[in-house]
Image (cartoon, rainbow, N blue to C red; front, side, top):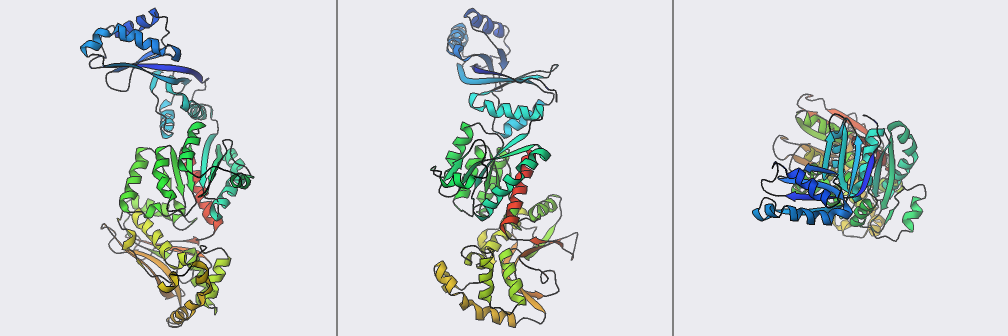
Length: 511
């Protein structure tokens, strides 16, 4: 890349001609120059527009109105005959000039940030490029060009939605690592927005260690529209929205944010389990807007599961079955219940105290979380299953689901006798595991999805699971009876936040 000064010329306007068979007529350019020069107006450039049958003339913004009048008078005959249909000006523009031997890369980065130059001229021999952008895109365009030409650190602007267990841990991880990442990867990570369901706080310069106080005292109502307005007001480039909520309402904002320049990273599983029509429509929207959506932590927290399945599937490998313990919470519960003499309710309360369960443990015990994860993997294989296709064994009887959370917790002991019976009636040297199982003919439109409690040999891969670890067995045509096994920490805020952080960094390096 050739280094050179970036020149910025503000307060410009384009006078546009549109008309049938207007281009290519001999003498048009000279008539434009002569007309405007005769009116004392300096012309920056005359260029064919990207639109069919159009010409653009660059002038100072103060001269735009007079330029249109002069040219309408000069080309009155062509207007009357229909050769020129419209002469008008576009004001509040900026010209950015720079030297580059790879301006296509710069244009690609501009387009990824929703910047589409109104005019581009280039001198091939000198590598000189001039682009015309709207005034409110000047700073973004300048920053992107400087990053490419001068090797300036790339600034990534992060909007973090949700600052609870996982979200708060992620914020601290980013703040702790930001300096090292700047030095090693030339990436400047700036957290410019932090929100929960009630309010949002903004900081153009990036939040620091006092972020909790800033969000506490913020009086701005949480709203995706306000986030977009903030990004546009301060002309922020390389925008990533990170969703660490479990909100079914917030995911409705994903399309709106993508259309307004945000890439998406999410630990929230809900969008990927919406009806297949919405799932596919969003993928089309991402492609149209040149945006990405990363969600590795949707299944397996920090384990590289989704990427592995994507890679196998895209390479043409025929995946025949995916089976495993998908929930770190239920892994902990049944790993301990199978080996200890404690009652089922005691183990659940222990998991709650360690922060492994949702505030209401029925969300884990219902099996719905495992079912969502299984559905996400099915859709990675291009299956069109819906949530209602999944056979789910709910671990809590219906009458206990009708209670409020606190009363349910106080009556946990009512589960003990049933699970003690299940445990005692297993075969010898067997243990209990709550598994998700995607099977059937996965080359058809739909697979079979089961979520249930099973008994497995204690010496099997599933049976040897420890602590709150998750395990996934991926069976393929090539590997036959020997599955690819991915196993590791499947729960915990630190692990999940680290996985989300990994998605942020992967996305940042491709922007």
